[in-house]
Length: 159
Length: 325
Image (cartoon, rainbow over all chains, first blue to last red):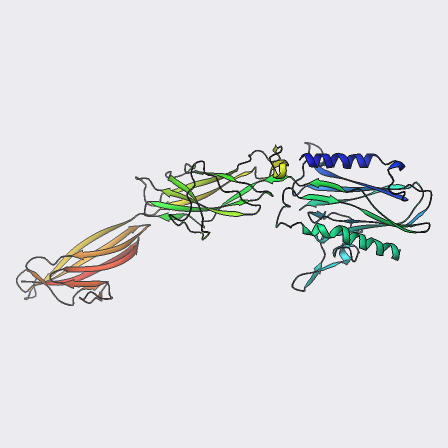
């Protein structure tokens, strides 16, 4: 678990520090990601609530949130801003992901909302794509003003 | 936009290909798996398109320890020979390799009697049936080999029935499997005891599980009733030379069990002679010769009828005639 703690530490660090000094290769946009475990806390007399904890301990079935912060660190307008995130095969996209999310179920060749996509089985039959079929996620923003920033995130479950 | 997308797909393909090498498990990612995540952005600025990757976040999947035990016997196992074998399966439902300590408990509440546990054996040859001398009997403390995630092991609990039990007495035997790493409430953590030095965490079953199998005593008893009817040459019932005595032997098998190799024999009384060709079983004639049918008879050797396996609750009648010398 030592390794996991170290990774978690770096991830947290990267998320916290987002000054222009961190910009890589003087590119206009800076991306920094982290991952947290989503714990559902149930207390007597209260609605169950979600709590984000560092991923020190992760086992199958755990719900994770992957977050990516973006910032236009340049003085220029950024256009056609597209973020893509391949999904590791050990995690499945959470079934409660918003239906408008752009996803791919074929390794990133084609994107669409989940309801627009189909999966071809080994026997040649076709079926509607499910959240666990998703291989990539994509977000499309038209433009980023200088200094503009934001965060994209998605939930996934350890298979 | 088009240019940006083209750039993206090349990058994504290169980044994603190695991830497919991770073996996918039926249920549960293997302990020690590293989950890496990198986002990539493409955009147009000033003089052209740019691509940038985020930092890569990595987390390691820890070891979930758990086990499922089920009985593989559809119902109570009948025992009439004093011993019985119950069959269970032990499945590693965790995501890492784990061994399990096995305990058979024959003293289950509600038992009519408590069987004696003679041993716990592993289905070494994998045929699902206990083979004495082939399947390994575990020595104390009975511990399985290390099972891979999802691996299922067939386990036999060898039992004997103590003296003094009655027909149709039932007993349950509980098999307990406990993860060697440790057990406890779900979520209990064993730091550093997981795969590759990661943590091990107890799963929903508590890293132990039990299942009940049951045996039922089937005792069958045989009662023989012999009767005789005499007909004398004069139409009466006196025993005089020339009288024919018809003997009937009724074999009643009672109880819930089965008797096997039941052979009924009788001698021809002194001063009488067997009447050839008069042997019957349940009113059907049997030949006197030792042949394919169940019976044989002769004046010197007497009669013998092989009933083989007879279930409790059935009855057979054998008749034969002798003449008084």
